[in-house]
Image (cartoon, rainbow over all chains, first blue to last red; front, side, top):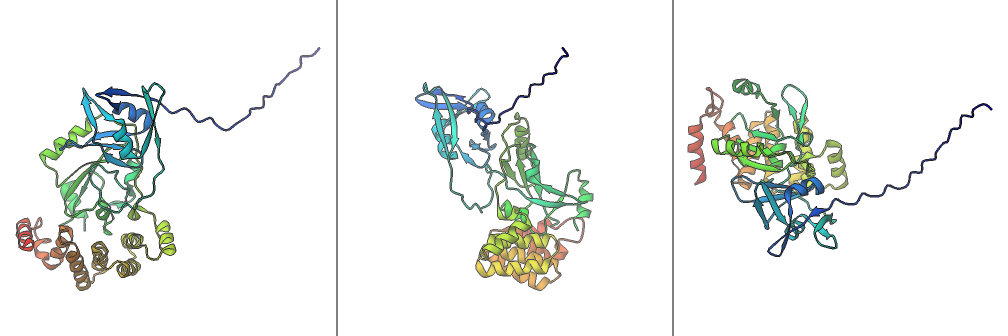
Amino acid sequence: MKGVFALAVMAVVCGPALSAPPDMISVEDHNGTAYVAGAELARKAAIAIKRLPGSDAVVACSSERCARLNVFFDRDKETLVGIDDLSRVLGLSPRFSDDRRQVWFQVEARSRTESGGPIRVGDLAPNFRLTRLGGGEVALAELRGRRVLINSWASW
Amino acid sequence: MVQPYVELARASFPVAVDPGDLFGQAFGLKAIPVTFLVDEVGIVRLSGGGPNRELLAQIEEILEEPLSPVRGQAPELPWAAAKPDLDQKVAEAPDDWPSRLALGRLLSNEGHRADAVKQFEAAARIRPQESSIHFAWGLALLDQGDKESALAKLKQARDLDPSNWRIRKQIWAIEHPDKFYTGKSPDYAWQKAQIAREKK
């Protein structure tokens, strides 16, 4: 009997993608206050913790906004930030595991604020698009991922 | 106009021109020169005057940090919007003066100064006490070669925002061109004296 080339065609059923469980971040307790480490926040929650040189201030920035933190401390080369303080200033809801040793942050919907004031240190830089001398354009948003030094001057 | 200065400084980094004061408004500049450092996330980490030792030390400190994987979105400010979006905003909400101001600046940057002035006029009718509108309007008039009208507008802007030294400098450059455009560099001693005179 000739071999029958049996081709099994598997119907691939594409269902709705299961949303991946959020990355849980380790919680540390110090003097009754719950903290998380800056490095984990960056890796797992897309929140950057940055110092502002020339002052003691520390800012936390999500992808859409920045705010100064009030509850934090340094350990070695790491900054630990208070969970409640972080949540309040960035508009997040902390969701703890049952044993409260891990947490993830849910973003709260927030009303759109008309921000028109001048940009201060610690803010997310607004985009701008200008013509370059010699042709072409430069847009700050396209330089995200790189550190950008801007010097503004005039012929006077 | 800028080219000779760039060549003089033998600048090795990209230079952008901003005749419509888009950057000035976005970053709320009151005086120049000014230096900003924006990190990889998009956060403004430093601001200072011209480069000095302390600023350079702080910049180096930041450059030594490990790169964060976080990327912040650039806030949507009127003056960063593209022209079609601004045209639409202005059509839908004629009282939206920030969008009119941004549109005027874009038009001015593109060389369409008459159209830019129309937007500035409309914005000023809605918000007559806004210095930035009169400043941008004055710059557009200056670009058109109308020095007298430009001066009047710039002085209006100055009086509405007395602590803005960029507006004052622009007025001085028109009224005292000899202190700015002859010789190798502007007469900074004269400027210092003028600041003292105007601070009274």
